[in-house]
Image: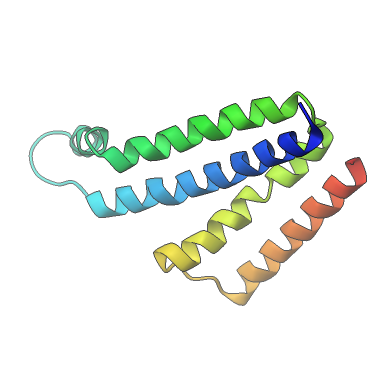
Length: 126
């Protein structure tokens, strides 16, 4: 497998996992709190299990894992793991734009530090 293919698989893995988290959160917010008779956990779970977008989010996790393991064949873990830490900032930024979550300056500063550190460690290991 060429290096470029491995890098593309790695990028798909990161984007897929971050996107799945946003989709899971969206679906769970739309289902909301479950009340009434019976177990709220079982009722909520039964609603999720019949939700097609919940299954799409699960498929995104599976695709992300498959791409990750495929990229591992060619890329060193000392490169992949620091860069994978970008999933958290990607998800936080996505939540800001997609879900309307707050992103105060302190969180933006933390995201910047994570990104700088991840890129730096990834660069050092390449």
